[in-house]
Amino acid sequence: MERVVSGIRPTGRLHLGNYFGAMVNFLKMQKTNDCLFFIADIHSLTTHPTPEDLHGNITQTLVEYLASGLDPEKATIYVQSDVPEIYELYALLNMNAYVGELNRTTSFKDKVRQNPENVNAGLLTYPVLMAADILIHHAAKVPVGKDQEQHLEMTRVFARRFNNIYKVDYFKEPDAFNFGQELIKIPGLDGSGKMGKSEGNGIFLADDPKLIRKKVMRAVTDSGPTVPNSPVSEAVQNLFTIMNVVSEPEMLEFYKQSYANCSIRYGDLKKQLAEDIIKFTDPIYQRMNDLSNNKEYLNKVAQKGAERAREIASKTVKEVREIMGIKRI
Ligand code: TRP
Image 1: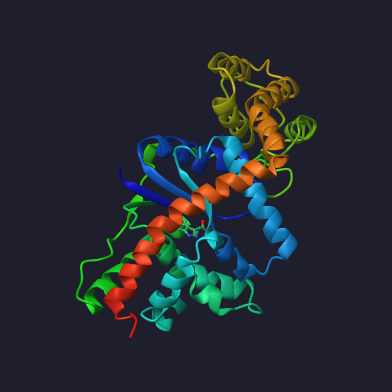
Image 2: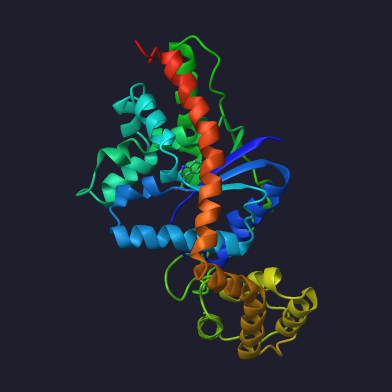
């Protein structure tokens, strides 16, 4: 089984776009691959969360991923900071990561532009930590979105460089896990673009039914079709697109027909859409509540994940130390 490694940002608030994007693919991958999914809490320290926020977000992220169906019996699920071997490899890889190339990373340049007051060394070496995350498990595949492609390329560079410097064939260069056609983009409720975190635009798995109804009823539409078969505006098409993933096909067909013959009432469409979203999210929502109240189980999952991850990681670090000449006198 090919090994897959993926880091998850501990933002703790998954929306439907995240669910139908990365999550659906994680759920498939865990059945067919040796998957290691981890919560990248050390990466998130670059933005200086408060200790309370950091801890809360890690817990909430674990809750949301488990509630969505990540299965600790199938995949290895752990918290990055529970595997200190990752920092050790990070320190060692840093010696062969050049400030010039790190400076040129797009994500770093963006961060410098956005937050010139917080250009810390952790941000600069973010790609090295990410390389450590991946290389420590000798991952074959890494599922990455567009924004992470450069980081993965740098992982490949660091792997190759290590092999060259020490004249070994030790690290293998990971490939991107290509979702291809399967990546579904979920639009937002504000009339244009994809679903994001801004309030009103996104529906979160943690939203209760009342809030979901409120958000959907406020979704942007248009003034309605006046001539049969008129083109569908982006805002209305967006609601159809969401309906396409949560509703029965007949329901979507019905509203498309009623748009085409101008009998559509957006209020009805929204009511139906809200109920179908709730039907879809409710079991996840219930599981989230159960899991949040079961700290013992969460702890068990994190511990089991860390044990398996450390088993692999400690072997890698031991081998890397030997290759580099770090050994007892
Ligand atoms: N940088 C990734 C993101 O922002 C998260 C991440 C950290 C990651 N380490 C990783 C992803 C290793 C894949 C593999 O989404």
